[in-house]
Length: 273
Image 1 (cartoon, rainbow, N blue to C red):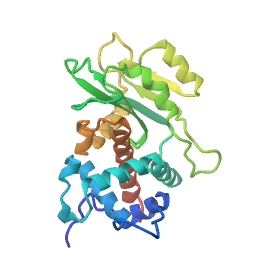
Image 2 (image 1 turned 60 degrees about the vertical axis):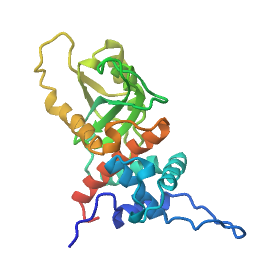
Image 3 (image 1 turned 180 degrees about the vertical axis):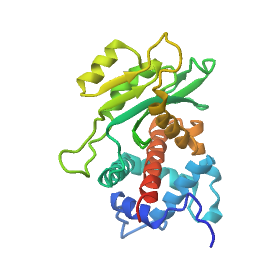
């Protein structure tokens, strides 16, 4: 049996995406060119995400339409909130299955170069002032991404801590009110500021941040490694290793899709989806 290519959307994931897509009514008079099937367009978007190939070089023989058609679908679906709702839907299913560990969470970020510039880019202090962006990620205790944000490469990690916590959506799926706050938050030395410790406590979260000016070996790495793993999984998608998009919303759309795919894999591997 031929192995399924990773950009080919399987039935289980498509069942969750299709109801979220906006319905486009075709004109009765002068309908124009035939509308490309949404599932094929999604496969084209995922092909670019996985391979990092430029949109204009999307192979026509794959049957996914032109690169610009797929780009427009990505843009339109992002503006309709499809990717965020997909991520929230999968988080709710994971929570219902008891696969989200709310006892702790971890935050970290990673720098990527932005070769074409654009919004939310800036000179990176860790890359010889080359223009880049930062991916800020928060994960639950098992490494499932709860939220991701994008900033310029010059932004200090800690300045995005509170917006990142606030970006975690309410996650239903268990009895009681939807959950969105972990009990403990782990972070490295870049987040060690008393001001932000107080802000985190005000959210009802216990901060466990490594102390600056101390030797390595705080022991927090046994909890923080999961966020590094999540970032590595996101950067396994070649389109996220380097930022090629001038428009920040397009790159954010790819980030959201990457988080959803990680959630889907976790759900699929632990259920009969």
